[in-house]
Amino acid sequence: MIEFLEGRLIEKTPTHLVIDVGGVGYFVNISLYTYGKVGTEEKIKVHTHLSIKEDAHTLYGFLEKEERELFRQLISVNGVGAGTARMILSSLSPSEVSQAIAKGDAGTLQRIKGIGAKSALRIIIDLKDKIRTDDSHLLLKGSGNTMRDESLSALLALGFGKAQIEKVMDGLAKKGESPSTVEELIKLALKNL
Image (cartoon, rainbow, N blue to C red; front, top):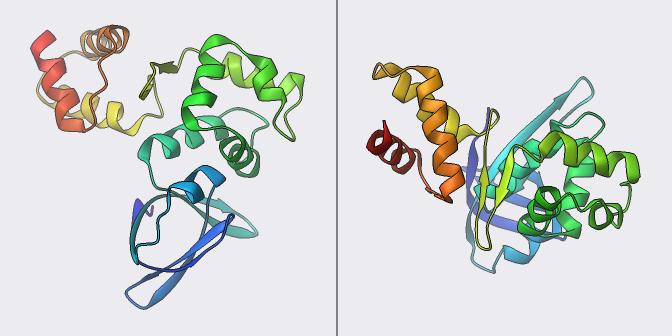
């Protein structure tokens, strides 16, 4: 619904930012990881996720798209809400979280406040096949990945079969390809189709 906010940074705390966008101040919840990345510049752009519940609309912000995608993957796990996902991303960097999941390291996840043995195992089981890591970049696989979904739609529109496209994309992920835009992913896929 709200993909990103770009405006003037009014307030910065370890838990939230206030961003003035065209005269409207947005209260944006953040992780400690994002807090550490926010500089002192007045102009800021944050990628957002809007959580809508019957009693509240809560906006979460991330300086990096990869952190937002990991946040979305975490909240897709049964029993992991936005508050818990934010706590996870405040306790560990996105790459540390993804590596713990990829390696099946429940102990690392259990050291986070509010994550018990069952929750840690559930996160690992649900996300292990959807998250792949290397030392420098987080690549999300499967549904729920906006870049992959947009690329899949574009390639379907070009007339390629869904099974064929998914096979190529999975092959790219296994090779360690980490495109940063939809266009790059589409070009890589087209070379292999």
